Length: 468
Image 1 (cartoon, one colour):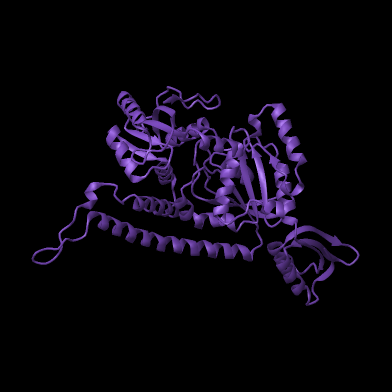
Image 2: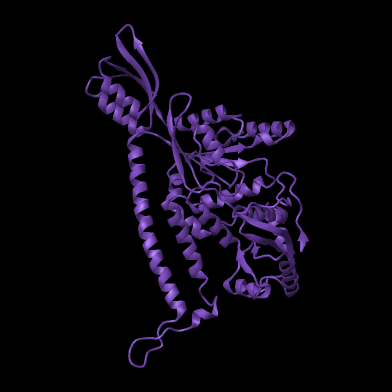
């Protein structure tokens, strides 16, 4: 097994012992196929094996595993029985014994048979990438909704692994009657129990989904656009969220620090109020059952007026992470090219520029300036606040696109009318017209709200001076 190279930016191979919360010593294995497949991955711009291993170690650290050793295993072909070749299986068995490891993390998708055979060969617990991510999500869920979503994903994963996974599941329970029938097997009983629990969870999640729909409907009655943050895990979404909203959502230099969604109202510089939504981070090879389970939460992204795609431009695999996020957005029915086509505002936020030297920062700024206005990224540092004014101005510009400007005159005594306009439109200007003695207001609204403004002005109390 090739030794893992040290990451100069974050020393995850430090020999400093972990706190007492560590759950055990672990080995992390990154299997890599030799030959054309690996070359095809490199040509497609995907991350390097070393970077994938670094991420896998970070995932293991996220559940307090003490990573005793990690490394890359080169494979000529995948073995149906053990995934790895016999020589590598024996080599890793020796490492497990040497390090007294209680768990081996395989950064790949293992079949139930492969998992069982590896556990027998190494005499220790073996988990794959999907199980590791599910474990992290299970620990990070804080709300009832989050716990239900994670449990649903976990049971879906377990259900798929009951088939011929363990021999004891083939035993039969006794039936009823004098002689006793063959009864149902343990496998059938476990599958039935999982299906019953899944049905119950789906019912509860359905109620959550209806509640969220009601909340979205109430927000539609008040014209607050939704700005949703998406991005790769640890890209700095929560730090940016805190910077924009002056909130105190947990932000840490760890994978999946934020799991449960958070929404806050924010007033932009020119007076427009928006709802900013922080969502769960994405990751490469995100289990499909997690995407399905968190769909109710991620509907905030689907319904968003503006999507901020937060990217860590200081990361060596920033481009690969971009493609991974776009894949998840496509699973949600969002075309990443919507921003370029003008169908939906998708703004790339190039975060963590404070970690770059001056030359690299200048290069990124020049690249951003050469992009078309509709797809121009905004370089920022959520940690220091650099570039936040430009980001707020860009959000306002995207929200203003397609909205109608209307100039009105109201009677000064019409407090109810002015209050309605403040609640249902974006008030750009409000002055006293000394010639007429009326209040001159310039408001901006989407086409539906603009029609409502015209309808209320039809009674003669408001005068529509001009419109955009």
